[in-house]
Image 1 (cartoon, one colour):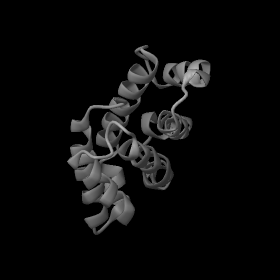
Image 2 (image 1 turned 180 degrees about the horizontal axis):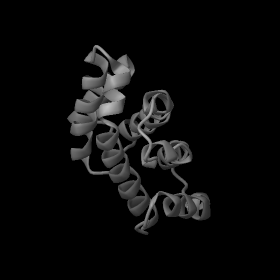
Image 3 (image 1 turned 90 degrees about the vertical axis):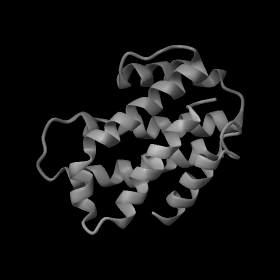
Length: 143
């Protein structure tokens, strides 16, 4: 199981709040820390679950994935890992200390990379029939 099923609930709440926000750029600015905390949990759990190694940070997670990706044989594991790599390539925006107009930089990771990663997690064989994964998938299709 790449991640705990419980993480789908706060992800659903986050994407629901974003989609109902009257100022989505402001939402991204104000919620960057929460997005980062959830993303940190996602990549840490996924890497540890699929490779049995706990990464020290996001660059270590990328190294672990790049070193061990060819050991994965199941298509849904590969889809999750490939989507996670996309998130990690853009991760600097989440750790950047500047707060000036961060929303423009946040949109691609939140609405493309992280969304795709979350969607792939919801379709993973270990999650696809759980209520929280189904709810998150439904929300992501609307965002």
